[in-house]
Image (tube, rainbow, N blue to C red; front, side, top):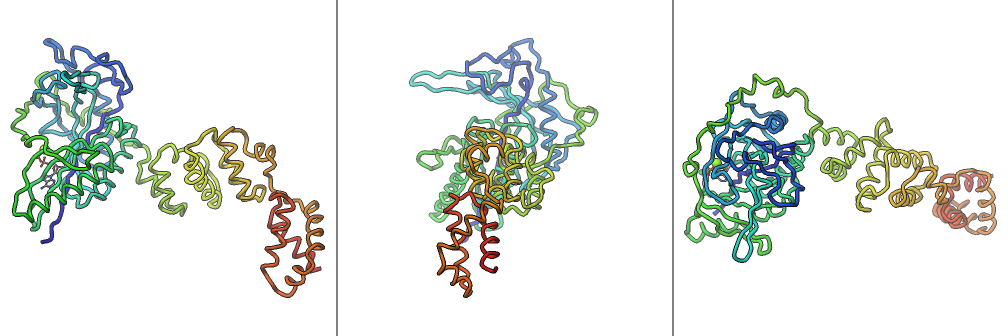
Length: 458
Ligand code: ADP
Ligand code: MG
């Protein structure tokens, strides 16, 4: 039987804000001492009142605008009740009926909603006890939910990567998955007819690779169950990264289990009436940058490298300003192959690559000499041309000194010269090679070729 997979993703991202979602506690993911960024509001002590963080709401709206979703006119926050040690209040403040954003699309995937909530604390389980840290409790967290429209692990991963980039471009979240600033969950089902199959939710996916592996694993596992005449159980599963398998964690909970109700302590928001929430302008978005770079005819791999690392793209943009296309391509090459190969920018600074590209196109540096110069710039920094000069990497293009060398080579290679005269083209390459050898690689081969031809022709 033919089975087709269906996947819907849920992505959580911690927002980069000064303070927490409903309190003045610091939102600092780098804080290493436990339980220092807490106020009574985060713990919902009696008599405390949560206050909505405007910056967080604004950031989610920015994402909504970028994705062309519909921004809610009216919105409210709800209490999602459940007990867990890392939930100090006994409930999480989230959004249920009125998410901030509805619909929208990214990387061809239709979105259901994006809402705003607060993050939980973190637990550390020891042998016979556990520790809880509430520094993260109450950190603004956005949740995006897609429609069940994804059909493969590659598509899921491509979508999630594009969303991560969007968050970074907008400055909404660092979205570092290793630090848990962005977390993925995948809902997966398979079906052999046009109805949806029973879905399984896989949590704890903290890399794009785990996402892909978990989806592929689930598709296989579910097909095998159905082929055996068994049923897929609707449940929450975890991903075991070492064993590369999903495993059952708990039965699925349903919305009614949470007893959602509007938080009576938080005012409802009329988004359209708040001027700060009327967002008209956004920074350049990943897909816009991609389109702009494609016009340089750089090749897809290079474009992707420059788009998917914001710092590379920004440096590139600074270097290629007003540069001719030929130099743009050279600059892109140096960034995406040489510097990435060296592991970063090192001591290379603004203007270095722009100058380097100019020196290459003007013939002052050979491509070999330019690479050597770049390596020194990476290690020591400095002015491009001065570094090249100091290290004798400037290409010799002055005809005077080269003429002497060419004369010498021609007189030492009479038979080759004869062959060339008789039409053997490769003899020219040999003679140029001799000139390069004689000058320890510093001669401009184009100038050598010109002089050789002139002298033989005469
Ligand atoms: P629930 O009520 O179980 O939370 P939702 O309808 O809210 O389910 O969907 C949660 C996520 O599961 C969404 O990302 C959605 O796209 C996805 N989803 C829903 N149905 C399926 C299905 N049959 N197969 C795969 N994913 C699904
Ligand atoms: Mg749901």
